[in-house]
Image (cartoon, rainbow, N blue to C red):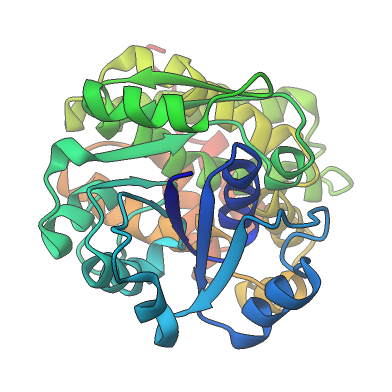
Amino acid sequence: MQRVVVVGTGSWGLALAQHLAALDNDVAVIGRRHEVVDEINRNRTSVNLPQANFNDNVTAYTFDNISDLSGDRRVENLVLAVPSYALEYGCNIVNNLSPNKVVHVIKGFEPTTLMQPSEYIHKKTKIDPKNIAYLTGPTFADEVALGQPTACVIAGEKSTTTYFQKMFTDTQFRCYTSDDIVGAQLGGALKNILAIAYGMCIGLESSELNLGENAKAAVISRGIAEVARLGKAYGANPYTFMGLSGIGDLLLTCASSKSRNRQAGELYGRGLTTKEIIEKLDLVPEGITTAKSIVKISKAKKVEMPICEAVKQIVEGKIQPKQAVGLLLSRPVGNE
């Protein structure tokens, strides 16, 4: 039985911990909040993932007692499952445990440096980039925790992606590999912004704008075009955006009412502010944070991304969703 450390006690980190424990791994989960850690250890449950009854192979720790993980059992593998704004915290834990390989599942950019997560992890931990991978795709945590069929992709250097593919894959959790970690991370980050835009279409359906299914389809198709344009500037493989980490993840996040970013978009469409949405959802949807980062990046790289720009303006309270629709529909049309 090998030891795997999962950093992060959000729904996705816990779902992966449960999955890995079911595959006969000794899983240590590290979280910030003592009450979450205590609930996992005492009751085998968590308010962050109500669907799970945690396997006995899962043990939770807080940052202040991770020294219990050291000793004669080296941490070989670490799953980094923190929000993009908590990357520095996550990297501090990586440095404390010094794993051989890291796979992260973060969908966003580090907000201060605007680095992709894999780049930031390497900079802050000095782990060889060849030993850093990215797991992403159309994956809802509750379905993974319940063992429902899921497909995802692990991107990075071949030997590392193959290693993690073997560690994660079973009949219900199908992991494909890709060598395009840059493109995969772009797809994972931008789909949350586009899901907010999609949700706004739903929130505005009963308004005088008369938005319907055509508008939602336009958001998805023109949105993936924005992703592809930015991907080209990054040197990503354009085919990446046609796969699980691109259109696959985007479709799930837009189509399902379980999506927190889509929920945020619907609430914007109904007139709520960013502060009110965060209070109502009791979390900060990644698309809200990423929208601010991506506009800075797109301007620096001289890439036109009007949908992402509109979402950013709405998130910051500078324009209303109805105004954003008017601005987008009045843009000149050109070649697709």
